[in-house]
Length: 375
Image (tube, rainbow, N blue to C red):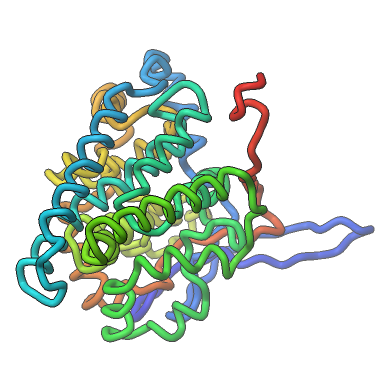
């Protein structure tokens, strides 16, 4: 991390009879232009096993949440109503902008996170029903993305921090060119575009029928709105989506979840690589969880992605001794401010794992027999 000593795990690969042997050592570096490399397993799988051993009852919290579909329907209808009410309002007006920022930005961030929740099959038991609900939740966002989001996001869970697989990680190009106050401010303002375009620059998903359905449905609804009410409705959807992923308090979760804000402990002669690794997932327990499907409980979510948003607080209560010692954020708005102005935090402030030596799995996007209801 910038302007402070950090600890990385250096490695040397020795090729012995066609096999690769990896040795680990600790070293100090003052370089700001590198990730926090590690060869340790991501912490969530290990903590999940420990929590289940200590509190086996947490497994009963897993499974779909019926309330999700009703919340999605309510927010989609709210956005349709707001868009219709603004159909004759000039796009370049304070009324349009403030509605898009306060109501639209919050609502579309809620729908982003509804799609996130649905991607884990936590609205219905049948995968196909979840895919269709995600397409419905996508409608006020204006641009089809729910079908692509799911495999990229599930890969993020299966391959947390793995270089070349986890598309939540910034690219080296982003980190180099945006390594300044102005650069970080630009990133925070336009981060929705980085999250939308970065995955395609890292690896492409195979195109499937769910993508076709997502695109056709979205384009059809957009055309119907434009033909019947004018372009303002579509502009409202697009502005709401942009502002939801820009300098909006709820957008702070994008940065808060996995950027390293804690200083890495200085190594001692007795330190091991695992004992000096920084925390790579942060939770937030504030009021904005009410409108964001409790995504702030992010350690809890990564530990148990099969537990829906309504039961994450119960998980934390049961396993409080595992979560209370972990670093946490108090404010997502403050996270954005600190990210921009703190010289010790940058796009380099992410824990990364080498794909060649770290287990990781890419989740496909093909339309399976199970999703078609044939199994």
